Length: 360
Image (cartoon, rainbow, N blue to C red; front, side, top):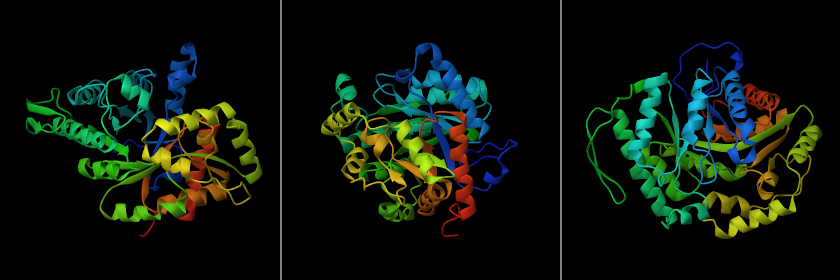
């Protein structure tokens, strides 16, 4: 039993009530910059094993100039779990697409494990400048499209790969060892801009959005109607009592003036569509009816909105996104096993409300 997108067929004991939930769920790996080096590997293993315990499909692993290489973390994950997919962030300016395909095929060959790829088109502006990359926003998505097309053709492996594009050219290229079809990777890409949605459609990827409130995301029905799979990146904090949930939320993400200033500085230099769009949203005054919360992002503590409140309210709000057709959910970094268990309780209650079967 698995929650969503993995093709894994191994039967697993445990949270059977999630067996029919048609949603692919990923957690997120902690960042090396946020933990002591001596504790980091243990923390990776802990969260990977919690992810597997609660039958999530995989775990997102970040990449940027200031973090440990994500492929080395992916190796730790596959060595310490049995089923989950490392969702490896892939920055095209770091390596040739052949190298990515080779890593996917090699992990499958050595471990019988499937990898998922989170294809990046951007990054922190200062990181890109330091690497000499001044490519404009929309052109970066065109580059990532070519990059991913090469990876996919190599991994399909039925013929040699030929591609002559604006950014990449390969001739008579073949992947060895070949990748068994059952290990072909899930592919995700940011879909918060028109360029991102076009790239997702071109490469057959799931377009991930950092969502606005659900009522503003209704336009996504148009994107879904074109056949583009969509997902959301969101954090969940839920308790039986609404007031307790908000107390935990403010305790975990207190207001921080330095963080607010860092967020404002980041906004001045970013060309990220989702970052600008969410930052432009006015967070309404918190009330008993509030569920959607931008506080962690506004205080530069994390990069996704949160849904906060009682289990019933958070489940209802998550169900609204699922009912719009968002079939992949990437959760924020779980601070503890208990918090991940509570997040999965939200999915259970969403399923009971019928949020897993929109329009069917």
